[in-house]
Image (cartoon, rainbow, N blue to C red; front, side):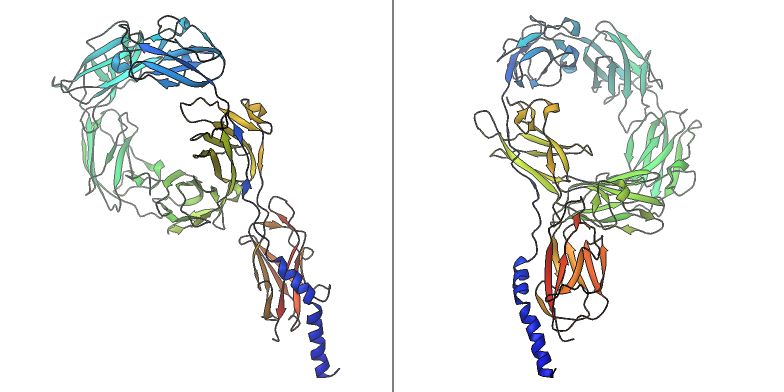
Length: 626
């Protein structure tokens, strides 16, 4: 065959593939599958109301009193409404049935929990009277019972009154607290007859100890207290002046605080700008340890700066905390240094470029630390002991989970990246998926849009919930969902007449057992790009061919991915490789491809990560002379 004939032959082969080329070019790259489930609509029915008035024993209306109704246990009538200025209340969104009602006590006004009795009220749940609700029910009037009062004076060891001391009475089914005034006097009302533990907590910067009141003194016994059987005016106490620890923590780069552990005080004291600290009010016979932490727990930190271990430098190992003996007097001049420790930090971003909101947790063998996500998506966890950690992101607006090796997330902890922290800082950036959605429309019985209602999607597999609020049209979109089966709950706005319930295939149902299941499937992965591009010409004969997918694909091998010339069905010998980190398939021909020839990449038989079969697809390119 002459040179000209050979050239003509090549032209013929290319021309004979023209129909194939045109057909494949029309296919293009498959679009990404839908992003969720829509049309989950619900019509919420309306309930009935219960209303009445709350007064005191003098028939004076009581404003700001909480009133609740309940079906079974009168002592468990939770929140429902709050009384207005005229003492009236209305509880909305009830179904027909038998109810009890109760008003919540208010110690500042010496009122105890009081139950509806059909004519007045009683502090005894056993006296509660049930009432039937079949429509709008009125006249559920409650006269609140007055409680017992306790008052007294708190003084220092010199007999002087102390202001700002919190005195708390804690008893079965009743209690209250108050702070002492400038004369050291306190008044607690709304108490029922019985025994009360009385806990006394002086101001944080005072030299006095925290403890329980017993026979006029403050003691270390949590079980001490008083019996109340009538109004009591002389529950006085003399405070105990405690011991003090003071010193300085040098070497900080961020604000810090110190807490005395293994003691009743439980206060956290901010370090002064120069690192000075003072911890007063410690019991002499309670040896205590010291833990130093970051002052801002919302962003940065997560792990303590360190604990005092008896040396001049804090220890990052919390198990080495040393006890400070206060029996001999105050401990002063405790000057300490900050250990040099590594951090884990990085940047979080949504796959759509948005900034996630939420927090991130780092967990190792020694415990967990948590920090908020910054305004630009940044995070940092400092003061880390050497260990192997996992990171977990909790985000409000993106799919969250354990950070994986490719910088994404997974709900399965077995997929979590192991982050080894030794002597140096670790940077770990994370990209969070947008996730899937469930959307729909919520209306009332007359077709009106339910505005400001709440919708919840509960994942039946992992027990995870996402929430949304209906907009001005009654529409909602629940975002950042993982593939799975969800139960949807619906409620109207607070204080409204709409009944809570669930979506089912036949419409609204009040019964959780009858709720339907909304199946949210993962989008079927599709090709997001190829190299060479579909229809490319002049491609190098030594090229490797790649196809990148929008998600994980399975069953990648020579039987499901292959290459052939457009004018032949014979497969070109090539190695097939799949990179799970980038969801990319690479074809590596064993020899140079034929020049000036159109080749077709066939992909047929792949499945998505959840086993869903992918539609067959193809793309083509034409080689150059070299």
